[in-house]
Image (cartoon, rainbow, N blue to C red; front, side, top):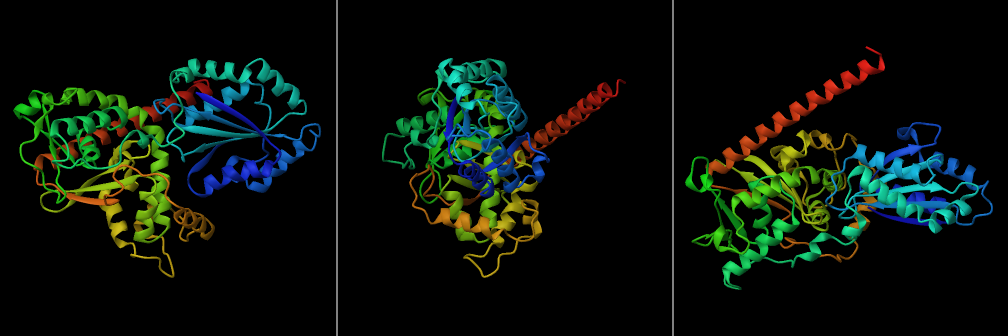
Length: 445
């Protein structure tokens, strides 16, 4: 964990920086401590009023507002509850937990991070000077790393830039390079950089680079011996003949090696789900197909829908090339099921209309019946900014529909969805039992 501590003369400016992220759907208020109302009832005026009451008493300090950021490794397994606990423990260790403070989670970078807004206590200058001189912030960070099992700051550098910079944007073209060398490069880079939970997500990621995974159906010899082959996809979408077996490639990316990534990725992907959901919600709020695709393309998002041999949509893989994570639609919940989402997308008008209606199935993603015009203005201003980053797959369609002639792929998806549903059901039952036990303890039963 890497901590940054900044002081500011403007409480309003610091607060509005974080509030704007929330307005854009790229941030969320996780905690609000020391305020007279519940967090969900706090408005900006109430937050500023409480902070101003304290800064008026601290006339000795010009830089009276604190803005801390806690940055985590992309390999840390985090959820909202754990982030709240980390923030509270960190502030307790540096002696700022008695101050009113706001904790925001931002989704605008490729690593999980928190922003904490507070003000200095009356003796704040002395307190912070002692913390700096005694390395109190650094010490607290190291203790938090051990207590919560986080990646140590000494072992990694926080990725302030999108992770895709480690990849060369582009697609492997058959004949441009030796097939074995070219496929090996992309396959090994994907295995090292991306997080995915099954072979179909792995295949969808590699398809962006012009590479197709050939895996065996249930009961086949290839499946039994954990074999894989890799083929090249031509510009017209057809595959070249004679896929190359995995054991001929550098690193020997056989199925048993790829499967090692499945388990390791499942938990570590969770902290990136809010980013994907927020970006999809923002894109739908724009209300038309062109801006929907432009907004997602700027952030490296691709939606790959699958059709079975009869032409029925049966699933989708959501790919975030910014954070290098992929999920099946069922991983994100009922509101993101492939058939319903594709129906909404195809129902969007091609260009900006005079009126934008939000309702029907889209109401699942956003319960408001009318769009917040202020938020729309902010989103459209972002669309008018120059594009500085080039993501992998940016030359491909944002919404891609693939009709696969392999019946066993559809069967594999159905099996995965059923397993996921059973796991969610078991987890929910466990949570209910735990809540019941906690209630029994509270009531001394």
